[in-house]
Length: 623
Ligand code: FAD
Image 1: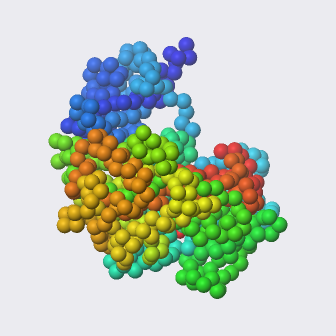
Image 2 (image 1 turned 45 degrees about the horizontal axis):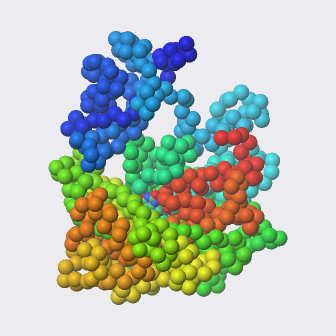
Image 3 (image 1 turned 60 degrees about the vertical axis):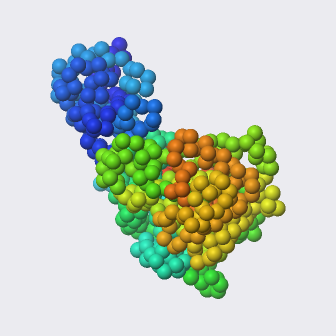
C-alpha cells in the first residue's frame, strides 16, 4: 500500500537517459529539451513524448559520453520527476504513472534530499535552531544573530587558519559562521596582486617566491583548470554543500549539474573575491603577505604562531601572535613548514605519491581521437560538445621489468586540462615543476595532462633518501634535474613522445608548446631512474591502445610533474582533526595528506571547521 501511495508523491529519479548529439541543444543547455523528453518517455514507456510537460522534470546531471563502443556519442542525463506536478499538468499520464515500478539504476523513488542549501544556510539554520531551543523562542527568524550568539557570555575562541587555499577558506568559513574569532594568515597576495605577480612571471620571468601559481589567495587551485571532479563521492552531502557554497559565491549553477564540472581561472578569481568579502563581513581578519614561520608551544599545546612579512626572508621582524588553536592548511608546496614541524617533533609520516611528466598535444588531435567525425562540433569550446579530454590508468609491475622497486605501479593521467596551457608551479628558481591551467571556455589549442607513476619509500631509499622528509627531497631532486636540463631561466626540458619511447633525441623536430617561458629539447628518458622511465614508457604504450595517436611527433612531454599530492601525512585524530602529536594543531587539506584536489580539500576544511567548532563548543546541534 505504502509503495502504491509513494508513486503519486515526491520525486522519482530517472537515470541513464541518453540523448543523441543531433537531438540535444548542446553542452551548455541544462534544461529539458524535446530530445530529453523523448528519452524520458522511453524509460517511462510513455507513448507520446510531446505530452510530457517539461516543467515536471529537472536536470540533476548532464554528461557527455563518446566512448568508442557506442553506436553514436550522446549526452547522458539524470533527471528528477515531480509526480504531483506531472499529474496536475498532464492528468493523462495517470495510467502510466500508476503502473510505474522502480527499476534499479533507471527509475528510483527518492527519499528526502538531505542537503538543502549551501554551507552558510546550513550553519545558520542549525545555529538558529540551537538558539531557539536555548531561548525557548519557537523559530522567530528575526532573532537570529549570525555571529557569536552561542558564546555571548564567554570569550570567543581565537583561531588562526594558516593558508587560504580551498581547505583553509572552508575551515575559516565554518568557524566564522559559528562565531569564532578567526584570523586567516596567507603568505601570498590577494588575487588582484597575485594576478600581476603571475603576469610578471609569465612575461618577464620574474618569480615572486611568495606569490605565484602555488602561493596566494585561493591557494594552488586559483590559476588552475578549476576542475571540480572528485573521487570522494560526487553526490555526498559534504561535496554538495561545498558545491552549493561555490555557487553562493558566484560559481555558475551548471557545476551542480555538469557531469565533469570545471570553473577555469577567470571564474575562480571573482568567486574568491566574493568569498573574501563574506569572511570580512563576518569579522574575519585576513592577513595577506604574512608567513607563519613557527608555532608557539607551551606545555605541549600550541598557543600561537610566529609570523613575518613574507617579503622578509630573514625573519628579522617577526611577530608573535597568540591563538587558542591553529588550523594548518598550507598545501604541499610549503616545504619550510614541514621542516618547522619536524623541529618540534610533530609526527610526520612519508606517504606514496606520483611523479612523471606532462604530456601535451594539439587539442585537435585529442578531439579527433576521441570524437572522430564529431570533432568539428567542438569549435574551441563554443560548440555543441565539450572539448575532448581523457583519463587513463594502467598498472605495470615486476612482470614488466620493474624489479628494482619490486612493486606494481599504477600509471595514470592526472589533472587533464583540455583547451589549457602548461604552467610553472615552482616556488624556487633553482627548481622546475609544472602543472596545467585553463580558462572557463577551454579555448586554447592545446590539451595537456600529467602522466605519472606512483612512487614509495623504496624509491626514495634507492636514491639514499631516508626519514620523514625523504619524499620531499625526492621531489626536489627531480625538480633540480629538470631545471638543469632546461638550462635555467625557467626553461622547461621537453621531448617528443616518439623520442621518449625510442630513448633518443631528435632536436630538430620539437613541436610548439603552450608553455610560455620557453622549452628546450632534452633527454627526458634519462631524467628519472630507469624503472620509473620504463614504467612511463610501458604505460604510454598501453595508453596508445586506448587513445591511438597519442604516441606521435606532435605530442610533447614536459619535465617535470612532481607535486601530484603530498609526500607526507601529518597524523591527526579521526574525529577531532587534532594532530596526534601536538595539542591545538589541526593539520588539514592536501599538505597534511588528507585531500587531493580543490573539492576534497574544501570538504576536509569544512569538516575540520566543524570539528574545531565542536572542540570549543560553538555548535550545539549536530549537522
Ligand atoms: P593549497 O591550495 O596549496 O593552499 C595552501 C595555501 O597556504 C597557499 O595559498 C599558500 O600560500 C599558503 N601557505 C603555505 N605556507 C604558508 C605559511 N607558512 N604561512 C602562511 N600561508 C602559507 N585540483 C583540482 O581539483 N582541479 C584542478 O583543476 C586543479 N588544477 C591545478 C592546477 C595547478 C596549476 C595547481 C598547482 C594545482 C591544481 N589542482 C587542481 C590541485 C589543487 O589546487 C589543490 O589540490 C588544492 O588547492 C589543495 O588545497 P589546500 O587548501 O590543501 O592547499
